[in-house]
Structure formats: structure tokens, C-alpha cells
Image 1: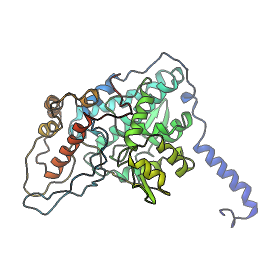
Image 2: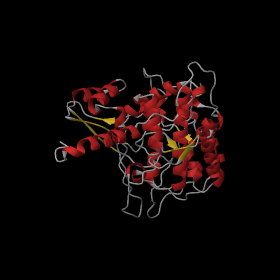
Image 3: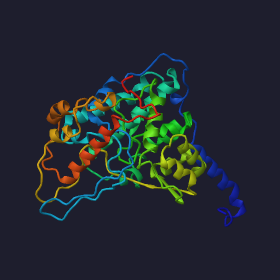
Image 4: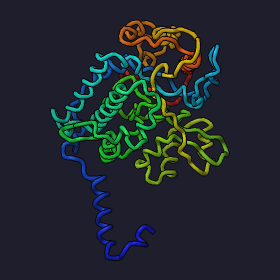
Length: 392
């Protein structure tokens, strides 16, 4: 159909141009990124990244599939926050608040990013195993996303940065071994070329609630596939990943899948088969009975800890330490919950690095309490899926 109105003399030229264009998009990887050494004993240390993530990532647990409570207007005003009740309480959180007015923290994050970019110039990636290389690319991707987002925080809605004409993910923001790279180059060229496995997309945190979650620890060659499997299970079995009702015609999935459709050549068929490998509960039956997959679930809000909503009217005064402490119930929750290691004690040190955000309205307090309720509920839950101990 496309060629019907084109002169025959132009057909060979157009076809050649199209082939050349396609080849340039999926060209062979630069030599410095090619190859691997199976069974290699070499590994990359991420102690600095581990320390940063442990101090700044809040693990919220698996989704309970419940919608958040309705927004409540503050005393003395009719204004209330608009939130996506389906997804607002989901996904791990990054303590962007601590970086806003703290140059030292931003420098630490930028230094980690710079040092990771330099790795392939110091040691050829081919000296490492494929799993070690995968961990490297995921860590570099996620650190770059965080480093870019702390620069624009407290911007709340990230839609224009993710899906707009000036997408952060299209910019050549990285220089690795002398080669300019964008975040999309990593996702769609390097990772897809080397692995071609949908699991890798769950290691790509994009800074907004509707994307795969940020982890409390860096990826390593030893934990990368186990962690990606856990990430997939968490995302797919959350409202921000999938949502459906039994016997409904449409089954809703995250728009993140549409943007990652290169990993699902026959989109609906391949995505359905992939989801069925991980999905559980009533959503599994809903997926099996649906006739259409609709990639329309979005939550573009940044994954900060206590939100950037504007406050209206008079209200309740709470400080940063009190808000962070509201996550802690005093129980022993295991390694996943030690992310801001002991939230009450960590609040004291993190508070010194952050700026007081003044007053916080009922909506923000409500979100915090609901997130904590989800976390507390996780303590007694038993699931067949192995939720990893990230300390190993």
C-alpha cells in the first residue's frame, strides 16, 4: 500500500534507502561492546552505588491491588489533590527530596555515574560474562536516570520527559568508551541486541510510578536474573502493570509495554504469553478471557517519598523526619525493608542533608499511611514466588 503511488523508477532507490535506514537503527554493536567471556571470574564492584541506594530507596512491597482512599480537602479550603487511586501507592520510592538543595549529594550521584561510564574504557566489557555486562548496563541506565531527574526535581509529572518530543531517553547524555549513547540506545540497541529477552526491561527504572521499580541494591552478575524475575513478578502483579476483570473484553496493561514493544514483535500475542509466565490471581483469568490488550495504564508522577503536591490553606505541620518515621512500625521486616535501613534512625541523618518542606496536607499523610499499611501487610504474606534477599 505504501508504494502504490510511487513511480517504478523510484522503487529500487526507496527500498535501498529503507534497508539502509533499518540497518543503521539495528547496526552491529561497536566492537568495544561486543563479546563476552563465559565463566569469567571478573566482576564490577558497586559498593558505592549499593550504599547510595540503601540510604535513599524505600521498598514498599508487592501491590495488594487495592485502590487508594479518596482525597480529602484540608480544613479551611475546598482544594484537594487529584491522584490516580489505582496506582498512586505502588512502586518503590527514591528520596529525591534529599537531593533538591544538597550539592554534595548530587555530586556523589554524578560521580558514580561518571565512574560507571568509564568502566569500558578501563577494561573491555568482553572480559566479563554476559550476566556481569547486563548488570553493568542496568546500573548505568538507572544511575543516569536518577542523576538527570535530581536536576529537575521537584518537577512532578514526567510525561513530557518520557514520551515527549524532547524525551530524556532520546538525548545522547552518555559517553561510554568514546561513544555517545542515549538511554534508548542502551535499551533498544545494546540490551536488545545482546540479550533479546523481555526480562531486561524490568531492570530499567524510568523515575515515574508507572515504570519498573528502583531496587535497594545494585545489580550484580550473580543476582541480575533472579532480581529481574522478581521485578517482573512485582510489576506484572501490580495495578500499574496490569489490570483487568474476568470476562471483560479489554485487559489493560501499562503503556510502558507499548514503548517497549520492540521486545514483543507480535505485540498482543507475545505480550500475553509473557504475562502469563508471571501473572497470578484473578488478573490471570481476566487476561485469559480478554480479547483485546489495551496499553493505557499510566502514572507519570515521579517516585519521590512524600510527594510534591501543592499545599492549600491551613493544615497540619510535619517535618521530614516525622514523615519518614511514619513508615516504621518497629517490627523486624527482613532485608527488603531495611532500605532506609532503620527509618526512624536514618531520618535523623537524612534530615541533615535535606531541606525542610514545611507543612504537609492530609493527602500526603494519607498516602504515607497507606504505603505503610501495604508494607506491614507484606510481613505475614506467603507467596510461591521467591522475593529475593538483595543482601546476597
